Image 1 (spheres, rainbow, N blue to C red):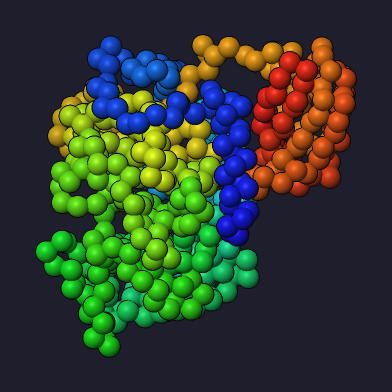
Image 2: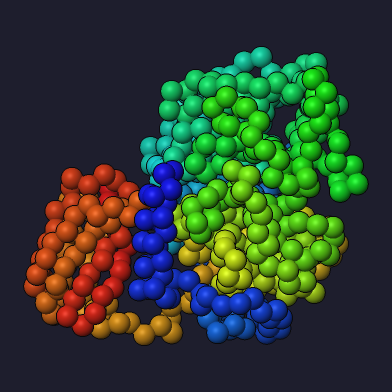
Length: 503
């Protein structure tokens, strides 16, 4: 993404946040707020409210236990949940969500839309709300259309025992252009494969001799994960290492690889090592438009969150509160709300909160409530992941119902600012917009004069503009490309924002 376009997009979303304060919690310095003890887990599709902070957070349960009989006919229980903090749950316009690579659901009714088949592991497209990608171990690259329930194999990468995205902690770029895959050769070598999702061709391959080695089939021995950045300009490699053993892997040329290394995506030329030690983190954008890795850093209990610029221009400490010093996860999947990272504090003793952290030196955070999980197993780890617009997060929890070490009991929940107590502005209360989604004509009903209407795309570019409109008007939108848009309405009594989906 061009930095000027990024800054325009950021300013646009900051304006939206100012006009619609109910979308996000209040910006403030971090507070250690213990979870309330009077919250009971809601039923499937139902909600509870976390009132522990100044902004009430609505928490809605979106999964339920799945009962089945195994091959022997014995009854079993599975607790399907979302996969990870770095794997997007929602589609591009947030009208649907998927649980693991199992099923797709309607994000409003929480009812099943489609069951996924042969799509593990699956990843939502960042640009097409109807598209799911799958990068298979056998080298197949698949596309699945949710509306038509059809699957297409668009390419195959031969010559490897296994091919992985990540493994497990990586993403395609925000424009669905590039993906970095890792391939295991029979001799233990590891290839980083830069694949073009537009042309369905390999752009470049770089071999790290012996880097897969005798690692498990699902993961290399010496690499934690490999991913393209959100722009697609960088490839980041998180090497497996500890603070006491940084020279963990030496390639054929005698070069030591460790910590977090950055490469140019098109030719895999080494750029810089941004940190000597890797930890839980995700790739996003800082407030100033530079791409960064946001991660926990230091030994256990260190209590620091850093962001490291991928261009090598330095690191910034985002927060040093002890609540961030035990265990947790970081998500920058809020690709339409750059400049923020979403952080999960896993341990109940460290507040067990979920916060959005502003990616600058301000120390500003937004409190998205608590996860209420016993957190005594990996299955129960909250792993909060941000929605594309950043106004919601999805997390896992048992709500304390099964505090047994190693328990599989966990459900997925959505958390967002509770709007039920919000007071509508005069413009909002007197103006109606329909239909939504819209494909042809958008109707604007109101009892007052509207000075201007602007329809703005997700890049912050004005696509349509009308001035001096009285109540009861219509705007043709059939010439707009399908996708999510925001409408800015300037009325006599004030200004407000609305979100629409053009089909």
